[in-house]
Image (cartoon, rainbow, N blue to C red; front, side, top):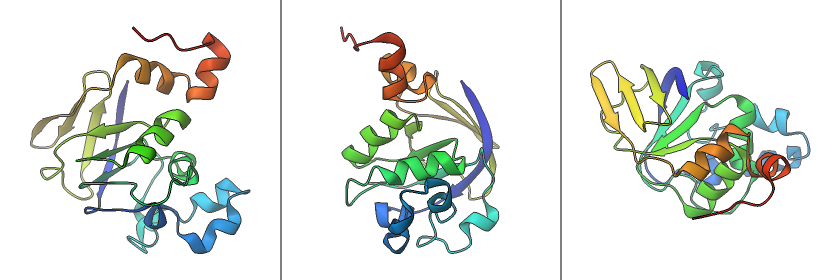
Length: 164
């Protein structure tokens, strides 16, 4: 699974309120409309720059705060290819994998805002204009869940998950 797009950088401690601002939560029954407002509180001009297929790149603790499952879902619906961060809040991480949004844990300092990058999810490699960055590889079961578009789709197709 190789993905290409622009990298849009954010700092540490991006909360679910930054991802999907609370003032728009009345739209959570209309996820395509909510997705039009992703990252608005972290960068008011984000959706003017962002194109489906681009990446969000951040520092530590991405997705902190409430366990709003709408936050990763809005990112996916908006067309975010993957989120690359130094670390993720645990509940955000599981919610993202469960709905089929790829996440990579990697050192992100060398990725520049707005640059074209390529990501190989299977190898856990990020290709920048200046070289390769190794990410923490996703477990095989998570790759399978992502390939099916999320946990519900995986279970519908394959039944229960068997862990070694």
